Length: 416
Image (cartoon, rainbow, N blue to C red; front, side):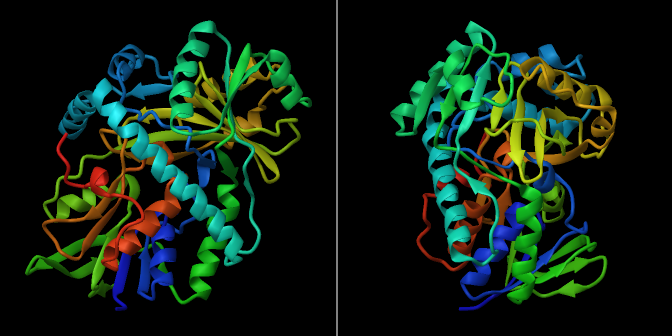
């Protein structure tokens, strides 16, 4: 049965929800408070990452966070501040950072990433969006130290156990794979299971398809209130209009927690800011890579090479911290000594806010308090990778169909 469905949020998650809901015959409206031209869905590394099986909440991360707290250029930075919501989230994060919980999360993360990779391929094969970059070259994890090599080898072994394609490359093999750029690294782990894209190409094409298909997209329109009656959202009030939806999908990224508060739902989310630098000149880089010690992502995209990184917990803001941008540039030069990021490229750096749940798993599922509310948020660094899978699952939940995956681990009201 067709339902009037409003998707709050026009990032990769919201648009993929709209895509699959439309495919199921629903009347869909997407509402976003921006013009949908920037933010995390545009500045991310464009990775599709079945290899990223270890959640951010893992043993040792809290200790690293405390160690790096007073270094504003560190890869994982928590700005010291008095914020009760952040304190609560940090406590949940700490409780999730156990070996047992990570082990339970690993196959769940792998399966939803594999599903999403297949769905990206399906979208491309459908021709709905025309041609777009979707390359399955894998991902190189470049390491400079034996300690980092050993750490990633353990992840690689676990990935192999799960059936993922992984190779270990020495320096000579790495140079053969990347012959047109000098790399200063001891070697690499090559996760052949991964793919990459150009977000700034895909997002406008998805928006164009949805509009032409009859999906209504409202931009520069902020959701101000949700009117509740009889355990349902009866009205959605925005800065421009009032809507009476049959179903509501909350896919507002880092702002989802604030909107959930309006309907007295606790949804622990912190905004994790990331930065990107684009280089629109030849680099010789043809393989996506992560510079392991520096935690910087490198992606060859259409017409540019993107360098992205850092996880900064400093609240919701658009402040560009120059020291963090400079740290990315310095890391690039250490691994690729012939590449120098210039002043103009540094000045054009952008940031995006990633919605981070405490345990590293997204929130996907129906509310138990409100029968017409479905959550689709909290994807952290895997938002791009998990866009289609989330959209597909949301369409199945709203259509009351069997879901492609068990969504119980993504329960929005799970205990931490």
